[in-house]
Length: 392
Image (cartoon, rainbow, N blue to C red):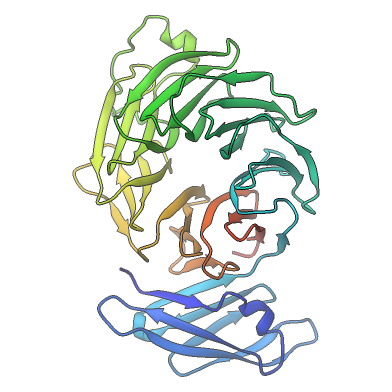
């Protein structure tokens, strides 16, 4: 595992008080953990604390909502961000998934209280309940229009909702197990769903019909992502002459994160396997960073960065903790990671330090999503947190 700095989750509140003190530690592979403290020596007129560190650490920069800390012994540094806003009243229980509309004004989220809600991204006010799934709703996402929502639940149904009136004009049925993830193809004429039944299905939204079972994996498919593949990647020959017209797209690659420790690539038109990459544990999530670059996260905390043109070995394996990787989200020149130990961090190519989004103490962060310079996360503690990244 890589060297990693961990900071007390409520540091931003504690360090606003004179003489306030928080713990900090650095976990270094093969060496004892380095422990230390940060202490507030006073707060300036503009609300920025003056913070000093114990001898094991150094404070490089402090603002109202961020602090940059380095540990020379671990040869590592991290910038910690506190939430700009915390929404506590959207759901009554754990928030398991969320997404933000293309305009940044609306959010949609699901919860273990078996609800799915539309809410205002500025103040968290609930706008509408989307009622129709039986049992829990596992996943939700906005269509590119920002006014339509796609969801999947434990009832094995995939549904399309109107944000304007909360109606559900389309329900897809065909899976034999709960829906674990969905993906939208291009502008939304077609969608993908993956399920505990081991299959991934392609649906036509206009016809309200299943076009094909694009993969039958024999093990639950925990996550999926659709991207445009590089021309050098052979996606196979389409099964039907009409498949281009049916799907309305070309050269799409479907990624599937499988419970049986495999990351699979499938040609969306050909419906043929393109590659299979074996990991050390179950894959929970996956996403495209570019037409050749992929990332996927596993149950044992590993994040594999891969080049789809050469899968003999990963480009990079990131392993900061043994907690499950719950979601991976492209952001700027890198990506955001959420894990089961309460951590949420960003990795950016142009930065020599990690960016940690703090707040949860040890509750899993299930999902992150971004809009503009804001990042939203949802957590087992029932809170939705909004972070502002304008100064990074």
